[in-house]
Length: 394
Image (tube, one colour):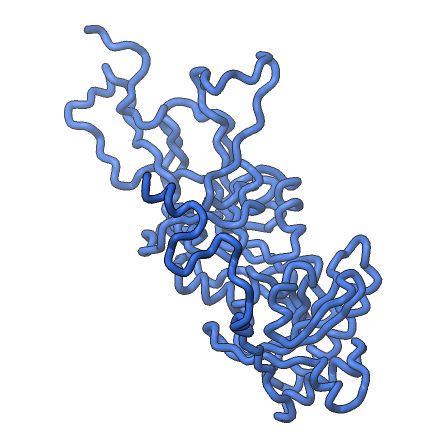
């Protein structure tokens, strides 16, 4: 039969991208944009990364791109109103967030944890393995153009983010964000948390991954070494980044309602941490939100009686879940001095550890039930307690 105007073999609706030395082919690409010179990442093949699993829901608060397609999505009960589009759904669990604007970028990086952002001039490239179909007639079928595929480095990045559960990942190809990143070629960037950043103490706002080729092991090692500022957040997501010894200050870490106390603690913690770093002492300092880490206080031999006002110090040493814990309360009690937080007590506790003067806290075992405890009212030693007859009948 006579051919119509559409030619599926031209590849994904003709959405070809300009490549080095090539040209844009096929049909017009909606919303096409110019490509900054030299802004291209390596096309290294993905490694054998683990499949994506669920991560913190905060990482998937925006759609991972895509306009929802054409042809009338229908279904889902309808949102009503032809003039109003439904908000895009969040990306699936394990998907990095796509930053579509500067507002997205600012929102993503304004966080208590580090932000990992991959930049690409285009999310898709012309398939380098595509071959013109045998028998294709340019006169009858139109000029052939290769189909596009997801950028191989973006595919690798998604695989890595899917197996790195304790970091926040995003990617972008938005021109205004690329300009913000000063991206002259594609790359991977790490932005440290602005809430804990201290340029005065040598913290750099951002780092760039030193290679165009992404591998899971290299990226994870880089993040582990670079993500935390001089004094960063110690949380369930970040605590494994601290290798060796770390002195943790537990407090009401509310920057809005308790901002003055937070700044008081951070200022003294940074001063002590900077001195330790300068002297090459193997001890890091971090801060933790007391309400989030309250379940771990007992490991350190600490107790909080005033969650909104307490400032407590503990020390964790070790790795791979083989830890020793030290209590500032025990240390200062043995010395007969106050354990109230100050720059002086912080330094004294750190110095005592480095001098080998601290004794690890040993968490007592849970006491066994007393022998004379009364058994439950429905308990029968011979298995004939309340309800036993009913079970037999069933």
